[in-house]
Amino acid sequence: MKKIIAFALLAFASPLAAHAATLKFPSDKPIASITIPDSWKPEETESGVQGTSADSAVYLSADVANSKSIDKVVTDSIDFLTKNGVSIDQSTQKDTPVTEVNGLQMTTLEWDGKDEDGPVSVGLLFVSTSGDNALVVTYWGSKGDEDKHDAEVKAIVASIKPVN
Image 1 (cartoon, rainbow, N blue to C red):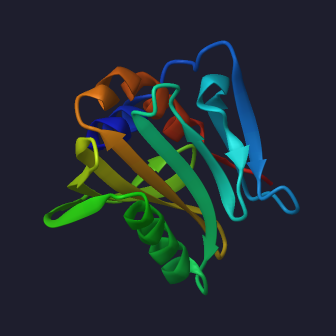
Image 2: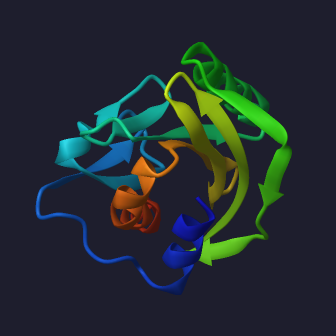
């Protein structure tokens, strides 16, 4: 995950594969857009968007939050991971300082963990979009297998933009 954010900060990652969906969300009053490859089967959720790599090695979602809902959105993300068998090793937590991509302030929390298939990387990326609005991006990737999706994930993160 740290490689993902570092790369996104160095440049606006290489273009996504030719076929990708740019989703503006939430659909009723969009605050942000994100581009996710079609092969990840991107879809809108109740509070944002999500996609999973074709081989299921990486899951990524972006959920809308504000100052009143941020704690619930984070709790919902952790609950989602737990319900899907992900355990997080709290002792491995790493924080990254605030950085800027596409004019948006971003910071991350990252952990090592496990799921039913073995070791995983877990991350929460916090993106300040506008005023009181923010995004919580949840990342869950299988160690080793996630590496082949680095370019796609970096491009997804670098594609996050505010919607005016």
